[in-house]
Amino acid sequence: MKRMHDRIRQVLIFLITIIMCSSMTANICIADTTKSDEIKVFLNGERLQFDVNPYIKNSRTLVPFRKIFEAFGLEVQWNATNQTVTAIGKGTEIVLTINNSKAIVNLEEKKLDAPPEINNSRTFVPLRFVGESIGAEVEWEAKSRTVIITYKEVITKPSPTPSSTKSTVTQTPAPSGRITYTPVGKYKIGDTATYGDLKFSIDKLDLDLKRSDINITGKVNKKQELQFYVYADNGEFIFITSSISAEKEGDMYKFTGYNYFLKESNIKGFDYIDVKIRTSENKLVSIAEYRNK
Image (cartoon, rainbow, N blue to C red; front, side, top):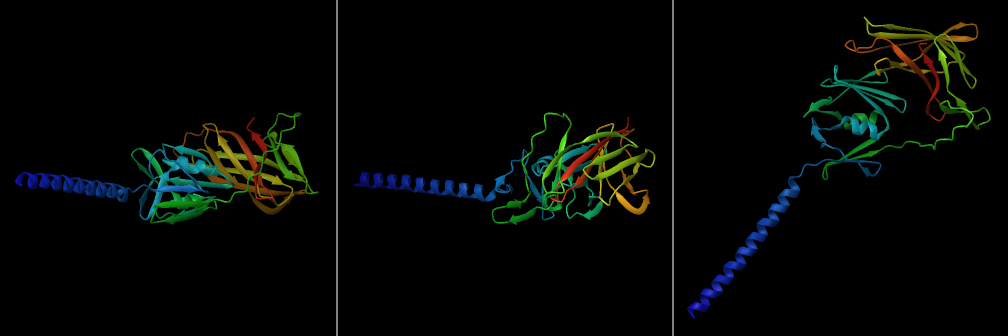
């Protein structure tokens, strides 16, 4: 009888041990799940995969800069000397400086709640600021620690390049509403360029290396804003928009453009200028290329 009691006691101890271990394992699994602080980012329903995890600082989500800018289709430049990130495209230029609470968006100064920073040799930028700067909607779901980005971009299929030319081809609406294809011409400073019914010239480019600023002057036959992407000889670019005056020279309006570049930059001259306009469909297209020689 005693032996049977001992046997029953051993079985009960074994079962209790299994139950306790199972309970502990479950608690460990639950703890591991709730302890996870991974932040997920979705752009138009597709999850963005980062090689290093985003994190939150000052109630703002910071993400690796290159991945997020390229996800929006922007070109990115990193200046290690000045610790500056520049992203350009979609008619927008964003300049962010490490540990600086001020950003520049299309030459306008903006205040940041969380400045860009370097963490473990990686550069992180504030996600909401980047998204909203190019017109995206950014939502935060605290329970699932998920960022949902909605970016409604109109995407057009590229049109075939005519076989008769090797030049870069862009498109502009014709007066009849049809689309015509115009090769982007290549010009020298002082030449008059044409694009459809638009005529313009870059008459002078002053690059002041001591003051670290750049000026463009020229003429255009109507009050059409021109955007200039001045590519320097070291691969950097400087973004300039035209300011058209009421003063005319013949049938052409005069315009000026100004911007600055970083004083520590090793720019010695410029390589070429990519001239762009924004169409009635709100598309930014190249219309001419000016070279120094």
